[in-house]
Length: 402
Length: 176
Image 1 (cartoon, rainbow over the protein chains, first blue to last red):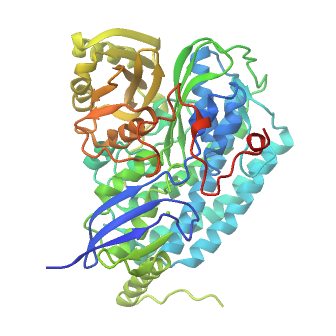
Image 2 (image 1 turned 45 degrees about the vertical axis):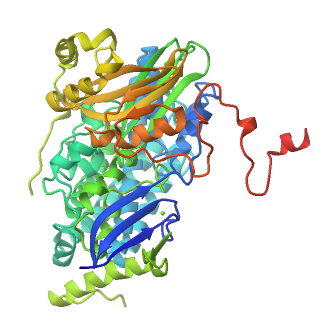
Image 3 (image 1 turned 120 degrees about the horizontal axis):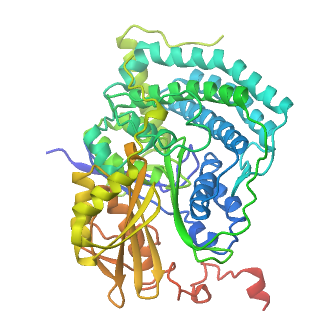
């Protein structure tokens, strides 16, 4: 009988520098069971939020996550706008959409780079992040900050963008299209990436529904859900785009979905700039009546869901925040079991877990002796070696930079 | 390349009609209904029927459980299960009261894996006991947090919170 050992990835991730604890139970090199422990970094934002006024809360909740820092405030704001029943001016909706899609681009590019690194394509990592940088600069140009944009407020947006800023955004999107198409094609056409990522970490549609996953994790399993289409906000019901899905449910499917969504985001932003209506940017909400509301926004990782209850005072009575990783991470129970341990690194990375919502350091211990067996860096090395082995098998030379 | 193309404009607007059908199917399990707008409906469910009601939403109407929210109210802990019906652009929330002093409910996590974590979270933070939950270990609170202290309840007072290993206090308290 093969001895069962526990490999602990966590509680602090050495690469992504965030806290989350995966316990993988392995027999030989096959994962047979797993457990996830979270909340080493619980910050009590839901409680903190009830001590702030309605107008202050967006500044708190954009700190839920540095990557999704447009999504969480907007989900909260939509929940409050539901309570108020107010109509947001059209121009504000377009401005919100631009920032939301810029966020999606930089988040998907961040993921693509990290995924490339995990499987040993460090060139992909360097190049994607190089082209991601101008996106952050564009965000700074548009909102005044690379992260924590603070552009949305209840009833509209806080700051307008002038024509010059809009032209700069439009140009940045034009400039990014070429590189992004090149990267997408490079990833989608590479035979080794196909061999490495296809049929790895499959999440079936049935399991996806059981664990109620969202975002690219769901769409990669052929489940066409997207809060932008299903509960339209911003300008998403006024511009042309489509919900991208792939039926396979493996890591490759999720990669394809993200690449295509990034290209779509470029188009959405360009349409928003082209069709930008004039007029006010703020509905001037002065009072939040008693009531309750749910706000949904499609963050890069999936649906961010906020519930707000008001008793008519100036602070929320209850504010529940559900970040997308909170429902995506438990689905590892379905996608990792039966996997080769070298595939787990990329499978865990494939849902793009956001550690602000959930947590990882990696050290592997022998379950009986407690002795350290390997570190997460070893696991990345194993993952990269597996790619090398495939390259050798397929007669592909690894790319060397002069 | 195969992709399902969906036109965002074509999302069916039948939210209110679907909410009616759901309320009708749940019948006497529901004793109150609030429609905040055509996209958001709240149904108050009798506590002893909550497991059955969740199963109907999940299995018969293909609802996706977004999450659950727990709120400390006068008579107990109010638990809201938020279900999204994506094609119809509708969120139906089942409202159920875990009445004091027991604050107990049947676990829906035993049927629906997606409810597993959020029920553990509500158990940690609000002290709702979920009968029949497969794995009631702590999710949010640390292992050395005292038993029976629920930080999201109204009567929670952080003045009694145990200090960190160094005994450090926030500066203003240390001076006072």
